[in-house]
Amino acid sequence: MSSVSYQEWIDSVVKPEQIEKYLNQGRDFVNEELINQALLANRQPSKTRLREIMAKALELQRLDPDETAALLNCQDEEIWEEMYQVGYQIKEKVYGRRIVTFAPLYVSNYCVNNCVYCGYRKSNKETVRHRLTLDQVEAEIKALVQQGHKRLIMVYGEHPLSDVHYIADTIACAYNTKVGNGEIRRVNVNAAPMSVEDLKILRDVGIGTFQVFQETYHHKSYQRLHPKGTIKANYHWRLYSLHRCLEAGVDDVGIGALFGLYNWKFEVMGLLLHTIDLEEKFGGVGPHTISVPRIQPAVNTPFTKNSRYLVDDDSFKKLVTVIRLSVPYTGLILTARERAEVRNDVIKVGVTQLDAGSNIGVGSYSENNLDYTRQQFILGDNRTLDEMIRDLAKMGFITSFCTADYRCGRTGECFMSITKQGKIHNLCMPNAILTFKEYLLDYASPETKTEASYLIDKELDALPNEHVREKVKSMLERIEAGERDLFL
Image (cartoon, rainbow, N blue to C red):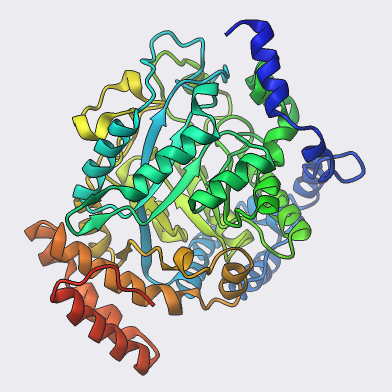
């Protein structure tokens, strides 16, 4: 692509009027002065104040910037242990003892951007580029369904070859591919920022959550890491991408920061301000999920090892905990970027979603290929889905493949209103039981059946509503008899 045609393409994608309408008197919501003042003013929070803030979070009230800054500045390990416990209590109060599981499917790694931390940057000559055909997408879906997956996050590089029509076609292919008793029931998307018009196309094809991560909320760091002349250099086009989603009717959105690009305390504050601005502009509807990716090594990408802001394991657990407390009702995603031992530990502070059996090389599921030259970064956790489910069961968690909220219209404002009351688990736990039963019957290894089957009776007995319990029992019998995809 020539420089002239590339600029023409950028001009055709970025629509300034779809940014300006969301600015606050010409400024974006990432008020760095406010963030820095809050962190400075709350340097030495007392135990009493920190416990008051934890009590507020337990009531499922979103924290304000000063309260979040106080948590971030805690220096007392005894209080941190209390925060870890409160984080889990919040998660169980809102979401129950279930963990939603999904798989990432990388569809195309062509990219016009040159982000210094990314293995897919256009200047990286060691990355093998590929864009799946629809036949190849079908092959990948079949490989994932045969593992037992029901939910995907489909990932696309930013490039004219991966425009909205290609994305819509590949999503439709994912939904239309069936293998025996299995199919993909919900496709979430991680892709480049789009216009309202393009997002309506994805809304109509039936996407779930649309994810765009700001990477870093720090303005100068963002500009330094995303070179001029690339479309991603436009901080505001990316920052307001999810505002445009909600405007377009894609009413479940996911935010995140790539920890390791700038100071992690600043990034947590940025995520909070992002949440606040979405809720203020869209009637209380904020992010459906917050993701916490941490920078990991990538082929021919030295920045991933040399950044001055790399986050150690202890700090990572702390930042996840503060996010859990700051936005207590929002889903929290921890990916296979992290090593298994890190995930097994951090899940206990309030994580709600995990990927499993992940392979992020384009076209790699059907080929069972772990070629790093196809990958954006190197994964830390290579457990299969079956191994993950077995490990979760040992920790007392039931794995959920439920997609009923999407298909019953419990999204956006409806989902938020239920979740903020701490009642979503009343709907989701019965469906978790049903989808878990499907997995055990259709895909589980003998070892996993032995380790995990107890969860069916345990969670069934724990359902608080007797009428619901009896209905779920009846549906379990129908699943045993061969029916599938039953939900409340």
